[in-house]
Image 1 (spheres, rainbow, N blue to C red):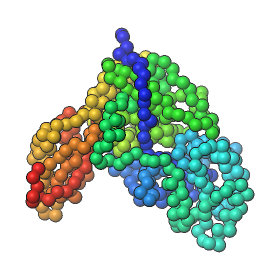
Image 2: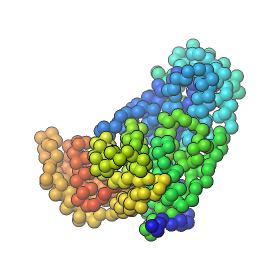
Image 3: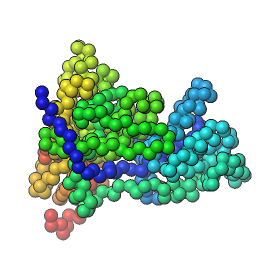
Image 4: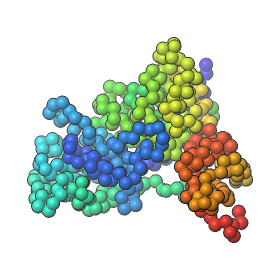
Length: 467
């Protein structure tokens, strides 16, 4: 069978993502408390999606109007001191590798620990902004414990009480100032938006460790990708590899995960979430690989939930289908079970593949082409409004404060993903369940298979309206 995938070349622009702040330090220094204070006032990554298990180890935060991702790298309980040392060093390396800004916490109650010194020595070797704070200094008298840590030779150390918020304003003011600029918010289109629509779509291969990401990427590209050194202090550029499928250009993009297994130092699966989030951010479309024999895990659900919230086009691919037991290799039954567990991505097409043999990969890429078309589609205003009028007529929203919720007009303000503004007389009358209904019905009515749809609900007075 001739391959429909060809290598191409063109200039690619770096993909945008929210800046990443990593909280690092020994166990029980208060990282989780600080994480909860920063991210707890906002919805966690998977909060608003039904059927997804919450995980409070990472989430979106905001400070002084700056949005960013915050990662709590703690939470492990090693069996021995040697294991503790190894894992503290490992989490620091991972922070170096993935974060834009690093915040290292010391324990003001227990005092300076030898492992603190080793971690600080690792952080000295990097060029990324790193801040140091002594936590658990909840009274002015305890701030005298701050000076012990100056023995590390640090020029600036912040006193902090994560529990009570003392010292947090000064610290976070400096931290957010060091974050790179975030992507522009949603709204009116700019020249840059139109330029972005002219570039090839970025395709990210995402999934848990050992699910077959590198095998699939190598199959798509027709060669083995270069291996990037992950040693501490080494800045790793994202690998963007252009190729075409059926005449359509794409850029295969990834931040970390596609490397030979022998070069992957960490074996702590939960840290792979950090890499997966980065990969999702860099892609317009996400091929999410699932392990066929193993099935869906909570980590799969968490990363997919994040991809939905970030407005990415989704294609689900069940890999290792050739390794499934014969009595379990029923695609229809497997699909039903999968969508029951991942009901919030029921719009995403599903392909059964073997990245090792190439079985099903062309069919998967056909689904990619369909999703790509939906992701970039512009809907005629007249067709959009007729579809929404029919949708509202079939099933009106509940009364809002005793009044009927009326739909006036809608327009598309963006693609990648398709984003629509709906003008109503009472926006607050649209509950989350009804908004999901609107999205589902609109996707069917205007043919947006596989693409997320964003709705912006706005109010407009009925009187004087000339829509």
